[in-house]
Image (cartoon, rainbow, N blue to C red; front, side, top):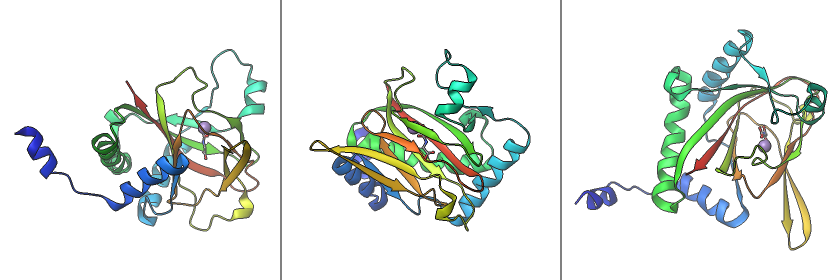
Length: 214
Ligand code: OGA
Ligand code: MN
C-alpha cells in the first residue's frame, strides 16, 4: 500500500529529467537557471557575511602537503556548510538540493545517502589545477555539484572558467564553462577530470558539493 502511494506521489520534473538525460549522455549537466537571480543574491549575501567574519579556511588537498605546494595546486578558501545549523539562505539551498536528491534516488536508483557542501571563494589570481574529485580517498563521491554565486555583471574576462575534460574515443575534449550567477554544473565525480582556470579579476564565489553513496 505504501508503495502504491509513493508512486501516486511521483510527479515528473522536466528540469530534473533533463539533468538525468545529460548525465547519462555526456556525464555532466549544465543548468543556467537552477537558482533565480534573487536566490543567488540571498546565497551570495550569506557567503559574504561568513567570509567577512573570517570563517573561511585555505582549502586543503589531504594533509601531507606543504602550504606552498597546496598553493600551486589550489588557492581557494572554503567553509563547510552544516545542514543541521542552516540559516534561511542555506535552507532554501538545501530545499532544492534535497528535491533533486530525492528525485535521483526515486528515478535512477543512485542510492545517494550522504551529501557535503562548502562555500568557496577564489580571490584574484587563484585557480585549481586539473584534478579528479575522488582524490581525497573518498570513492563515495558520486556526483559533483557546483553553483556559482557571482555578481550579475560577472564578465567572461574575469576568467575562472571551469574546464571539464573528456575522452571521446581516444581524443581529449575540453568544455569551458563560465561561472555565471545561478548556473549549476553537475558531473560524475569519478569520471571527469576538471580544473578552475585562474581568476583574472574580481573574486569568484560558489557553493561546491558532492552527492555520495553508501
Ligand atoms: C572543486 C572544483 C569547480 C568550480 O572544488 O573540487 O573542482 O568550478 N570546483 O569551482
Ligand atoms: Mn573538483
